[in-house]
Length: 154
Image 1: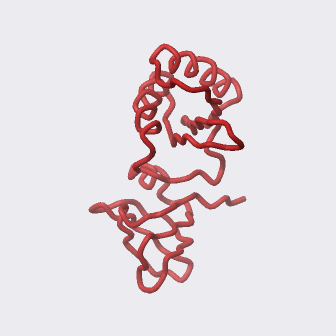
Image 2: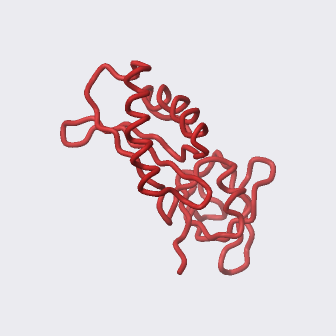
Image 3: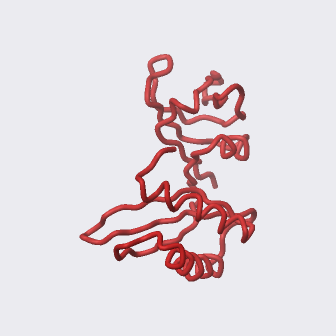
């Protein structure tokens, strides 16, 4: 999960900060939108993130970045939860959400396919084990996953 230099600089600071609050960093991105720089954090915790959590993170993490001197330019900090269709990035995400369905897009085709809507069955040997609606099982290397999100089920 490689990002821009700014994202790589902020990621360890955000991970330590959120772990201290009993939360986890899901993702960090630093983008330019409409002529302004935006730093986005996706945070989660067991039981889900609350509005009070988001307010606390926004206030305290912004102050921490100022103290750390992480930015020399103006930016906007946006903090949110990953949502019901949470993106999956790390091996531990696929382990944690085993038993749930996910949409996975691969970088290279597997049996002629790049898109999978499948049940997550865990991780073994650096590969995500999945089962599709037809009952076919696939091992998708973590390094071959381009994008993955949980499927929202009601």
